[in-house]
Length: 217
Image 1: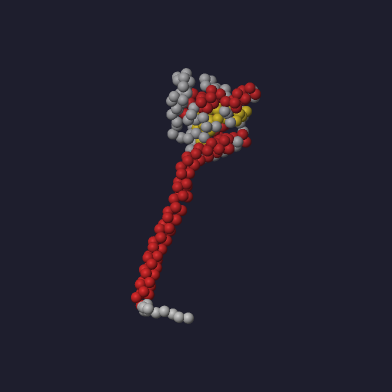
Image 2: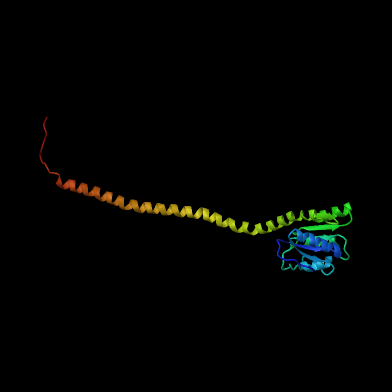
């Protein structure tokens, strides 16, 4: 098993052929990918923390995710024991790994085999020998999955905060403004009432009284 660090995407490459495994590893490294290589489907399941189906009827019963994140799995189709198709099915049946893109490789161009893998959920089916141009197609699959995963949690956390910030400050400002206006108006009304009463009282006191006066025309 070989691991190369310090890169953006992490690819798990599975092939029982030493030559093909090294070829894929070098091509992925040229594409700035971190690569982990294994030589069998059973070792791939072990790396992912998935039990083999003959040990447990429920593939989701025990799924221990690896400490490192896997962004893509590329596997040979024809391998002894667990084939690439078997590995594809196990990954897509796992709740923990079903979103990881899986790419199948084969030296045989058999349409029925290709269709079966694509229907089961494979993103691509490459014919060997795999070329660097083929692997450049993988970045779009890895980027799409990674962005979707990163965007899910922040979207749920931000919404309620925005709604609260939009409503509460406006209401508080209007309420405070109304209270200040009412406090300013109350002393003005009280002073006006006092002045009016004082004028009435003072006018009644200073007005002269004339009794028994008649006016003739």
